Length: 640
Image (cartoon, rainbow, N blue to C red; front, side, top):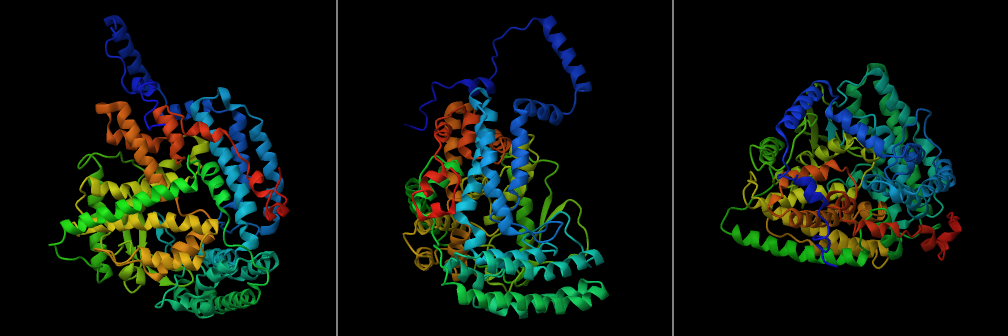
């Protein structure tokens, strides 16, 4: 079946985009229409109100009710569980058990609906909710964080404190200003004291420890990156790291709480250190598997990601992207052979000057003053970067003392951190290479848009294939349309190096998830497959470690969304261009893509193009239980 098999059969959207121009309207009717239009503009509700009313009318009330109740129940199921119940630290095992009991009930309610006569919009929302239920089932019976992953408990304990701090790469528009209030300081002290509760649950629940995930827990606790320079980020140095953090942070505490912070931090560090010793003693006595199996990977791609592919097809596409990335990289190297080399910034001040210029140039370039590629919105903030303090185990932190209205603040690594000097992604070499991916029009831009989606089901649905695909697409768009990188043409080489690294992520990640190679083999392969090329510095051990252990083994699914999502977006663009021919408008295409929400691109294809050739395959559902039942995992009592 070709990409355009429905082209001649489907004209619906063409008509929608090109209203009939030959219709004759009597003058009196025309005047009457103008009059009523004028009156409606005076007294009509805002467009948002009308659109919201229209969207809600499309949905069955019971579907909206089910989505709200299911998402409330799901709570802590995400791989990125965030502690912080008002009642204290949750009982993780009890929550998982409750989810296992309730998921079949919610699934039965969804299965009772007959969406065959629903609108396309509502059919898509039905599939979205079903994919969320399938993802929860996968998390409960395949990923099994609370019983397999020691990092879960260590990271939960650290994150329970970190959520009260001012830090992380994205500070946002309203970061907590210094000094900390008395209430905030007491919350931090309380979170430190809750560490023992979390770790005790780990000792009780970890009955199938994955040794490779135990290694991650010991080498990568919290936000600390392992490296020769940052060796002390490892768990064996956790007491010293907590003490160092507390000594810095206590200067921003009220005096009474400041006296308590360092002793509390040291005690917390000792609890984590003791957990690490327990882990080393027990990591091999109750060993679990690091991989999940090729059949489950294929099931996940189709039922959760709602991508019309299997893992073999993703590997084939990634191999094509790999050779294209290397070839286009070589073209760039050849074009730039007589230009002076570029290197990372030597100081944060130098980098921030490049960053300031890039953020202004990039946004202007996308808008009407430049290429006219995208629509901006009033609620999109200005974005400015600031230097962070890097303190293991929390990573990048900040201690801001002044407000900056309307500005989303982004932290960059300090100049002495390895990622500033050696990141293969080129952070300090040219901020334009990844700024469009991360900030505007990347993640900050698209997440703000999707939060404003008028459909309550879509406003609260996330799809990393859509999100990462859009952001990765914008990286390559800069090279295709000759964005003037402030560091010159050599910066274009870094775009293709990023493409190569993401292709290798699939080529290595899928065999790793299938159990065909070990994490150690995958780690060595990353180092060999991405050497120093052109302006690229070659992948560092720290980056390769994170790709393999934290991205693939830890998360279980985070290797194919960016590359495959970008290719799906290219396919969507190509088919839309053939549909509309010379009427195709790139800005309108981008705006429409955002309008439909952060949903799988195969479903946007159905809604935007009117083509269900991919979406219709998702109705032929395969239950996860049918894959797990013949295996040992059936002992986990997966409901039929």
